[in-house]
Amino acid sequence: MVTSLKRTTIFLTPDQHERLRRLAFEQRTSMAKLLRDAALEVLEDEEDIREGLKALSDEKGTMTWQQYRKSRQERRG
Image (cartoon, rainbow, N blue to C red):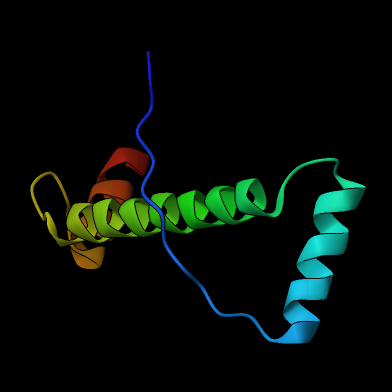
């Protein structure tokens, strides 16, 4: 399976570039791979946040604090 990649340009300060270059060297990988992995992680985190917020807004199957306390008291007798 062939993966199609798109080219993009980012601008880094000289310090950021040097730090990224050294990190890539230490990890024996390319700067491009480090940046792709970092971008993918951010995108996955964003997706997780979006799904979490959607789940929090769904009130089906939830109960209020008062309903919870009442059900706990009823279970205890």
